[in-house]
Amino acid sequence: KYLVDNGAQVILCSHMGKPKGEAKPEFSLAPVAKRLSEMLGKEVVFAADDNVVGENAKKAVAEMKDGDVVLLQNTRYRKEETKNGEELSKELASLAEMFVNDAFGTAHRAHCSTVGVTEYLKPAVCGYLIQKELKFLGDAVETPERPFVAILGGAKVSDKINVINNLLEKVDTLIIGGGMAYTFLKAQGYTVGSSLVEEDKVEYAKEMLAKAEEKGVKLLLPVDHR
Image (cartoon, rainbow, N blue to C red):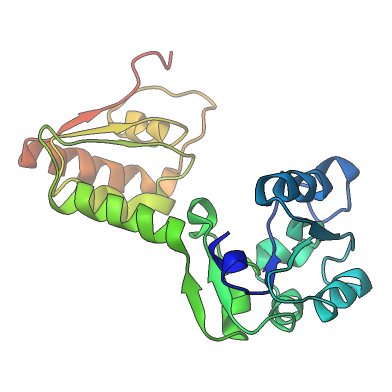
């Protein structure tokens, strides 16, 4: 809205669900364009190209006037999106003059629409939502209120090695849930059956358990896993 109000020509791209590189109607962003139009109080042009950057998108962008908004089709309709492919990255970059990433929830993913496009489009900056989230996290980690409790989830310990290590230097309690908890449970000697375990990270989990004890940090794991 800030960009629209200040006369920018705004091209939006996003993903929804996991169409796995196929143009599945149930994952189309057409309803998103409609809802955005209602929220902004002006038409949001939907470029319905199954290849994301197609003739509809190029035509819509070419006809844009200041304050206009165009929404591209689901970027995950293209297989290379999640692989950070060069071709799609270049195609996305070709539409614009600068890139703004305001999707904090996917900023960690090396996809065409988050990382690849920045290789071919400058300047590349973060938006107000990411700025707000970074400030919140920075304040929470650097000057936390005590007791400081952090909760981590997800499937893989390997994705959060640095996070776990750094948090143990700052928190009073660290709660680990999700699939990654089983690697820690196995490190404690529990039988976890066929549950998800990163065998090559069991030793690391043991080290983190020992570090938590050394630092006086409570490291809590699920008790209802049996």
